[in-house]
Image 1 (cartoon, one colour):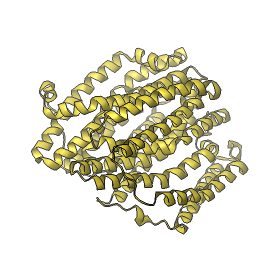
Image 2: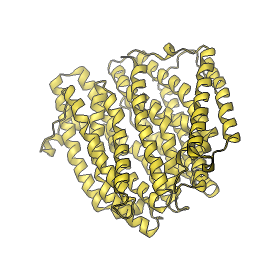
Image 3: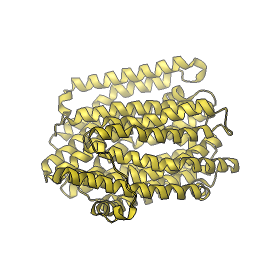
Image 4: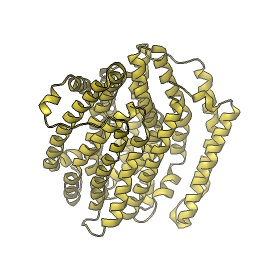
Length: 512
């Protein structure tokens, strides 16, 4: 398997998802702006998303995918299918219980997450949480399906699935925003429609590989099976690791809810722009690397294991560093040309820009974590990332005490970025210390050439940000054309400089 081709496929399909996600945020900004109501939706939507990241795409995937890869490689097809059935059955019943509890406890959950919301916005957040909490169960089953498909080296459907959620939210907002009160409720309806559609499209791909999960009525039998016991055993430390990051998000949301109304939304809009490179690069590389690293670990091929990590880190540097440069130097034009419409005014542009620049500082580390952490997960070492995450959580919250009084909501984003730099550094140090990663020769010259190639890109973006008009008075199409044109010119100059410095695409082709 050509890993570069696989990662490129995922990146292109993920780009579709991120573009639809960006269109979704543009629509939300235009229709609803950044205020207490959008804060309420972001809080309500964050709650099922936290559960999804903690137990589905996070701890569950980290525990299930390596075990499934090992079982498929060392045991029969019948035993592999039995593992899938047992884990699927246990997961379904657990998700049903959690979804019911979330609906019943919505007022408590909203209070714990964002007690500073305006009273009417708080009530709206509770209603939307009750409606959307079952989405956590739907998307967790989507994550189960994605883990199976990725193990079978089918990356297309899992990568494109998130776009369906965005399309559902856009459609529901347009169709229902005049029919419900407050209009923000239309977004919550769209989330639930999207969850059902996302799960439905997984099944044809699973049938193609004859690995459709068979859900059974007996939870007790599935829970007592060896496969589920092994997944749960691995999930416990992984859950703690992922939970630490999500606890940090909850604390930050709580702090933001006590700041100026709109703070939660400004951070959400900035996060959406940051998700472009983190998803297109980090998620794609992580999705390809985890199964591949797991197979190398099962085969006890330490040389291949180290080469896979080195390949991921080199590709991260060459693609993530220019993205970080763009977020730092071109932040205000990006926010202006994408969001400065309708009810999203100039003050919202400035507030979102400050958060985006703060996030940009940690972009390279945030993507690097998605390469480094699977290095531990594939070896079924989940405790080390937990310890690192606990240290990072403590440091992040200490930084909040320093940055938030000074920078407001942007201080929360800056603390996350510096925490990500610390996290990536500790993960890298751990891999090196354990001998799990040995850098390939030539890193010094490689890094210097990439740094040199940033100069023309940075020059073009900085000139454009300082010398061209970006406020809405100059026309929507004009701003959009200027922004996309400058980004295209910067990208051409960057890759042309890399070519002049001797970089070739074949350098990044890695066959497993």
